[in-house]
Image (cartoon, rainbow, N blue to C red; front, side):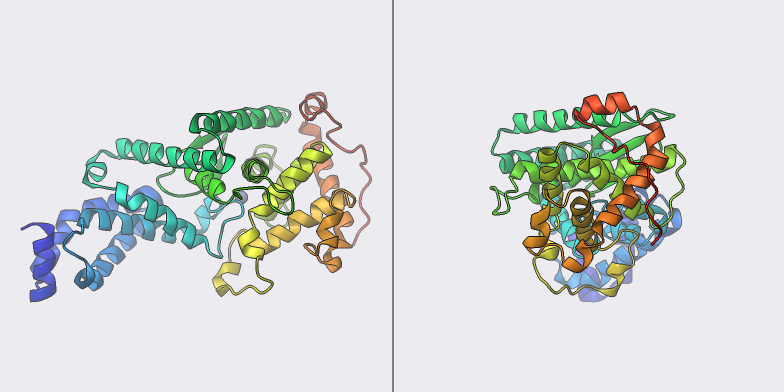
Length: 392
Ligand SMILES: [Zn+2]
């Protein structure tokens, strides 16, 4: 019997044997999809079980055109990435920049919706390495098409720009003297829009690039944010955030407070060291990625959205604005005058930025090649001020 006949037998005749046959036939696909994402046998078993439970409850609703193995694979991947989110050891890898917690699942859904029609038997039947490579290329193409569309350029030009941006980043980060090599790379991540640092390597997924492309405006906004600024801003920020994690790790920097907030602060600081024009464009571009979170003055979110290792997106938005305003209250005066940054927070931002400058100079400064940094940024990279900020 084929899958559909077995399903019918289960639905209409309540046949346990038919269901067992389905489980035996497909358990390998489900389990391997789960373990690849989770890397943990126990967790993969839990996911496998829940996938077949869902199949049992949904069996009636599945139509005759369903390719069951695709449905199972997709469901397993989706459930595994959900499971993943709850796994503290993996937290850091999850949703690094703007997109997380509140509404993160819709990003994930949209990625799977894109992928679903392409995930046919042929892909599923391939060996794991081949399959990952094919999915990687699929998302790579998607990412560049999305970026090309936003920038109004051809796909090849979009590729060239991304490569140039990556080279530029490598050059900028080359000014940090690190005990080991650090590589920045963009890679396919099996359908998950993510970014992470792992000893010696920063990875940003093509899937993430795809989301950045989608998160950019089609034309310059009324606040003067161009599609390119939004894209480069987000692109730069996510790498700089991971660079923060890398610094804390490789330079053995103890972090008080939350590591994710510290990585955000590191990224914001780096962005603010560019010339005024560039710094402003990059900050605005990054801020744009939060637009969905701040479009309403009231936020409704599930309680669990506040449990993440990352601060909730609206908070990250205000932190970004505050540090920028604290660094240069003239350049970013409109943050306050336009009502983006409330007065109550704004008045302490100079102090907040001062604390960041002090921390950066003290712990990162000694590992920075000042001459190279100046060359790269074509301006003074670090403020000379090493005065300790007054206690609060
Ligand atoms: Zn992080």
